Image 1: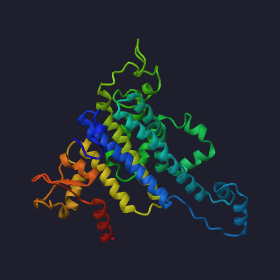
Image 2 (image 1 turned 180 degrees about the vertical axis):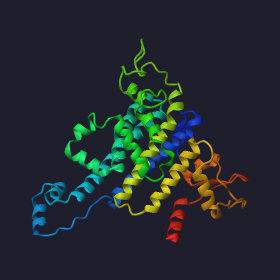
Image 3 (image 1 turned 30 degrees about the vertical axis):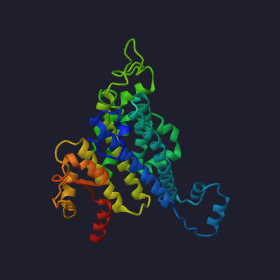
Image 4 (image 1 turned 120 degrees about the horizontal axis):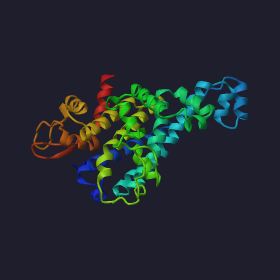
Length: 350
């Protein structure tokens, strides 16, 4: 199944059964990149500080930067908000560089490079986003007091990350699909033979000795791997998509706190991205397919033959990722501007 957002030439090295999965991963990458750019353009996360008196004005003049001014004038809450926003605006572009490189490497069957590139944003960036989402006050204190000891030490260990991921799932909207045990197992459990943790280490290091992930005798990690094998595609796409969707929903949560003006737009993105994941990777009925069939029924009529269109699992991925409806009677495809309709419907309800 192909969704149609990536040229066939780029997909030619990937098994056809994984085309939709790869396109979904790039779709979520592009959503994260789009929101990052828009947030920067509209100044989301920027703070306006009211100067209270001449002492504030003098402190501003003598401070080397805004953070020093906030500290000097006792504005702890503003200092926290500024630092959390600042980290968000810098961390997402950094993560996107590695994610983009990893996805492009998969298109070229460069498996070692792909897994090495995914490692940093998934194992290091994601827990920081989760901590900011779950408890930004705690994140601020750790970043302010001794970030080296905490973030690169024993305190921020695997069990702590598991608790943080669970707390973030409880707070963020749209996380019904996510399970903390599953995310932890994918990213940090070396005993999970089907997870990414062991693959990340083997892709990064020529020799590994951890239990159940040790380099085999007469071998060097990935050096002799046949690039025509499809096992990485078969085992990793659902997990990569799962992690990317989690990152995307963390971004939506954090942007909602940064003054992003369109809450209904963020809500729509949650529904569409989760719907796409359910359509491609889910088992059984999709909650989002049912939602869109109910909420948009009056708009889902084929303009060519007049047939009432209902989303099915076979057509849902294309709809969620491209807003294209496929008529089951005549096969005609037409665009349904869901984001526009959703925004208008929300305004009418208000």
